[in-house]
Every structure is written in C-alpha cells, then in structure tokens.
Amino acid sequence: MTDTRKLALVTGGAGFIGSHLCARLVKDGYRVISLDNYFTGSRDNHVEGVEYRDGHTKDIDKHVSESPDIIYHLGEYSRVAKSIEEPALVWNLNMEGTFAVLEFWRTRGGKLVYAGSSTKMATPRPEGTAGRDLSPYTWSKASNTELVHNYGHWYDLPYSIAYFYNVYGPRERAGEYGTVIEIFRQKFLKGEPLEVRLPGTQERIYTHVNDTVEGLVLVGEKGARDEYSIAAKESYPILGVAELFGGEIVMLPARSTSRPSAAIDTDTKKIAALGWEQSHSLEQYIEEVKHEMQK
Image (tube, rainbow, N blue to C red; front, side):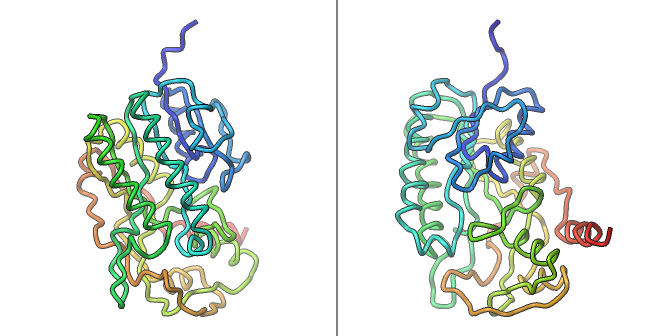
C-alpha cells in the first residue's frame, strides 16, 4: 500500500530540539526520517513513529534515497566557546555536512528550513568583534545562512531560515556541549554552586523548546524565502538567571567569545504573522524546577 503522507527529513532528529520537532511532525501526520550521527544526539531521544538513520550529513545521499517534501536542517555543531578548541570538527560538521545537505536539496527538491544562529546578530564586543566572527561556530553558521539564501535564489528553490534563541526545556543537555539553563538546573538540583562568567551582565533571550518547535512548524508550512526569529520577548542577564535559581554563585573569568548583550535583531513580527505566539517563560520554567525539587 502506498504511503501518501508528506515526508519530512530532520537532520539532528535525535538531538534536543530535533527530537521535539520529530514528535510534533509525527503528531501532525508526517512520515518522518531522522538523520543523525549521534555526536550530541541520543538514542534516548528516539520518538515512536520516526525512522532513524545513523550517519553524517555529508553522506546524506548514501543514507536517504527518498525525496522529502520538507527538510529541516538542524544537524550541526552548536557551541560557541567550545568551537574555538576544535575548528576542524566545526568545519567537518557545519561546512562539509551542510554543503552536502544543500546539494541533496538542489537535486531532490522540496523545501528547506535551515536552523540559523542568532549569534550573528549580537552586539559587537568592546574591541569591535562582530557576533559572526566570535568563533568557528558563529562564522560557520553565518556563512551557511548566506549559502542557503544563495542556493534558494540560484536554483529557484523554496526555503526559510529560522533563528533560535538559547532554547531550553526537556531533553536539554548539560556537559561540555550543553546549554546554560540545563547546566544550571542540574547543578541547582545537586546543590552545587552555579558558575557565571564575568561580568555577569551579558543579556540573553531564552526560548522554550515547545515555542521553538511551534515556530519551526509554522515556518515549514507557511514561511517564505525569508528569515524568522523565534524569540521570547524577555531577556535576562546571565547573573540574573543564576539568581532566579538561587543558591551559591561562583564568578569565573570572562571568555573572548562572550557576547555583551542579546541579539540586536529580535523582531518577531514575521513569525507572529504566521500565527506564532510565545506560550512559555523562563521564570515559569525555573519555578517548576524548584517545585519539583521540593516534592
């Protein structure tokens, strides 16, 4: 019997955001294929109804013979400071891998939704370093955004670019490739001090994974050849986030990759025009963490 469902390919589908997206797409009636090399993804994140294929995005042609209706490209290296230590790995995952995904898109067709990084829109550092030039990661993401735009126009292909803003929520990772909210959450639950990089005034926007996925689905269904910021309306200094959790705070030396403020461009009018609304807040999430601890 022929499967008449629309086919969605999610690179990085076993990762934090990717697994939530896969679950939503299955719920919405898609046939879903995940391509993940499990560098930061986990088999614990597997979702019932998804076809999982273990492989590098640079080998996408070898692992995916189908022609998807939509490709969500989330499967890239995604840490700012850590990327300074391993530029070759960033190049391998983000440049070689993404080029192969774009070639796959060019030859197979369908719509591409690329997960961009809002770091390129950050306020320049005091010495003048732009957000896109902070690290191999930020440069690769900004460069790939430009390449996606060009492929779309060179080959007349449908695409949209979605920008993430410090996504948090269930299945978030800690550790060296982890994100700050989960690192804080785990330390808080263990009664360990929360470590904050000086000066502590660095502003960030934090967006819940469910809100992020809702935005991704809307961009996939309705988005034009444009860029969409999926961003919560609130921003917080990193020291303020630690204080929301409570407990002991330890200040650490600043990093050369630290951004002084949240991204300059957080205009959510475009994503709102597609029907997106923020439904979660960081303060609510942290209160839920505290409540769980008290049980």
